[in-house]
Every structure is written in structure tokens, then in C-alpha cells.
Length: 214
Image (cartoon, rainbow, N blue to C red; front, side, top):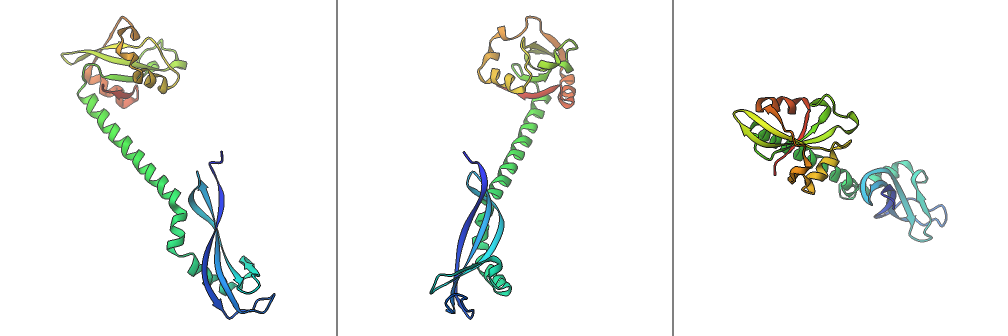
């Protein structure tokens, strides 16, 4: 399947008079424009070229681009390639811009939410962590793991540590999505204890990669 490429579109113009057809000497022509554009998934993203053209109304002789007198070509382009005809050629660009803005807003919202979570930890909060930044003996090839708050007491958090490490974050997220983390057997028997104030430092340093609250 072709996801991107280049296509062309013909935009009709007006009937003009005053130039002579080199083939039949007729002096009436239909103007048009040919616009080529880059597309993503068949959605026009931006124009790549614009050419003016004329077609003899009698013999259908066609002149395109440099074949059209320069001054006439400029006039045709200004009439044919107006805002109404050009704007749809940027549909893909507009969609991409909207998607970027949406993702940026989502990331900002998620960061604000995680900041609130780390300020007020709760039992069963799940911390996706970089294990080597917390445990010296962690395997750097499987650096992503999970901590789960099992108890909070007097400014200290008791956290369960996952038995499994992953080389990618999506491995941990899949375990959360599949609710494997709800089973105590997912975690090591021996918990660790960290001051709740330290958790914020771990988030700022990146040791805590992300936070999930169920």
C-alpha cells in the first residue's frame, strides 16, 4: 500500500480571447491550471508545483507551462490558483498541525497529572521506573520495571518491586493493561521503603519514568 506520493489535479478556468492558436488560428481558449501536490494517505499535504495551461476551443490544441506566454501564464495562475482552490492542498498539513497540538496538550496534561500524583502518593499507585537508577545490581539490558505502593506511613512509602524487567517501556505498560500487576505474585516478596519526599526527586531525575493510578 502506498502511504505517500505525488499527484496532480486540473483546475478549470475561464474562456479567454486575444491569442491565436498555432494550429488552427482560432482565438478562443479555455484556461486551466495543473497543480501537483504531495499527499499522505491520499490526503493533500502541500503543493509542489503549479502550471498554467490553455486549450483551444476549436481544435483542442493544448499549451502548458512554458508553452504559454509568460505574461498570460501569470494572469491565469492568479485567477485559477486562488485561495479557494489552493487551501484544500494543505489539508494534510493542517491535520498534522492539529495532531501535534493535540499530542502536546495531552503530554502537558499527563505531566501535570503525574506531578499531582507524586505530590500526594496513594496506595496502589504504580511507578514505571528505570531499575538501574534505583538498584545497583539491576540488568541495564532490561532496565524498565515497576514499583507499586502497598502502604504509606508517616512520610514513608512501602513499595513492591516487580520480578520482571523489560528492555522497553511497553512491556511494563502491557502488564498494567493486562492487570497482571494486580496479582501479588507479580512482585518480589521483599518490599523496599522510600521517603515520600524522595519520590519527587526520583521523578524529577527520571528514575521514575511514569506514574499510573488505578
